[in-house]
Image (tube, rainbow, N blue to C red; front, side, top):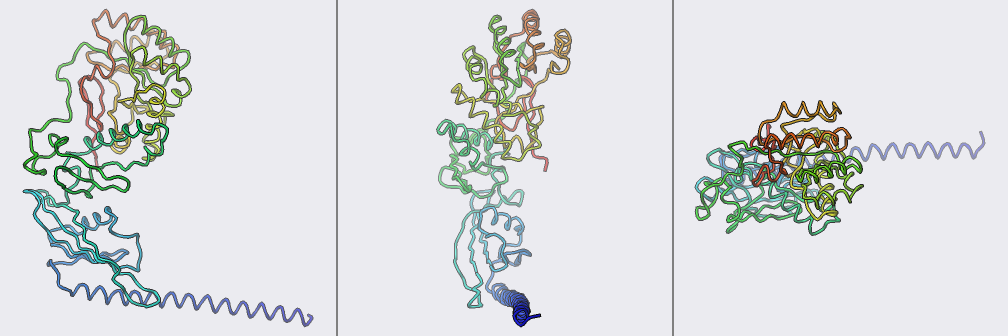
Amino acid sequence: MTGTSKKILLYFMLAGLLLTYLFYFVQHEQSYQQQLINKEQQLLVNQLKQAPVKSDRLFLSQESPTIIIDAPSYLTHKQIYTDLKQQHLVAPATSNQVIKVTVTPKKQLEGVNYFHYDITYFNWQTWLKNWKQSAKTSQSHFYWRLDTDRLLTLGDLFKGQALLTKINHQQQMDQLKKTPNQLDTLLDMSLLKEDMTNFSYQDKQIVVNTPKKTWHLPFHTYAAFMEQPLIPKSFRQKTKELYQVQTTPEPKIALTFDDGPHPETTQKILDILNQHQVPATFFVLGKQAARYPDILTQLVKQGHEIGNHSFSHPNLETLTPKEVKTEILKTQQIVYQITGTIPQYVRPPYGNISYNTAQNIATPIVNWDVDSLDWKTKNPEQIMIDIKKQLSQSNIILLHDIHQTTAETLDNLLVYLKQENYQLVTISELLNREETPMTVYYSGYHYQEIKNKD
């Protein structure tokens, strides 16, 4: 080995030793710093716990950041902690922060206590090796329901999710009309949910703060549908039922067609409906509507109703919330751009629907109570047999305008229904009421509210 080679080898050995030393030094320093933080944090926590408190019990969180909650013992500290996180008053998890929260109760309404937050933040100063009180804020943003002894939620005020979803839908459709080409704007809207607690009573309204929107919900608009003991006396009134339904079936039938429009079979079906001068409701796929806009325009001109059957016909129960909203809102956008109308109903593919999916759909759900099975049998005679044996009154019949055999069945079906003195109507005419989201309608008088099973 030459002298030069020996020098190079020596340099590599020295470099290796230096890197090893640096590695262990950094590890030791990090360990030392963390031990120092933990020690000083414990001293700070003990100091804060010994300060004058307003309750007979303190709560210390077991996760980062460390939170000391000084609140009346009858409150559930876990719920307070959840509320703090929901209101973004707790920073992302970090071991280098201590938060002291003092909760003071004040009377709000007969059945509701109003609580005031005093929040103090302490951050670790790495170079100074001490804790510094960085900011102090006051938040007056949480309410306690006395009869149930828990945090008051929007769902308590608005009797569940249905009305909140209806408000969400109206806001989405208003936004669609303002920005018909901006789907991302619709998808990014913050929506109202029944478990929210980040709201406040302000003058004549409830104000809800969400990450991207502040909602103003006036009592004069919604009081009749709200829980009366939980709103100010001056706004209380005779309650109205959000859910309305026929008590007596009527000799009406709504024909509904799914999966179109199709360039051949939908056109044949439209011609037959026009010959008989009867309306129907078409639950269209967004991708098909975009492909055949002229047929969609013709549907509206002939007086038919358009419903939303998603964009690409997936099982919505297998999708994420954003994917569900994309499937529905993208179709709403396409239909509105082509026809200037917005579908008021959604029929989920395969009729599958759950609480979470219904929240993200945000419109009334229309399924059926008479299944023609036309997709399965593809036989005009059998289709007629299957429909006849299920008929009663106020029925919603499921058909598909993508099958030739369905078009071949339609003329005989319409003749039969007229002979039996049925009146053919659209879904809107059959239901004949202000329909409610978070609800599945199976016929003119049979519906089911979709409730959270958790």
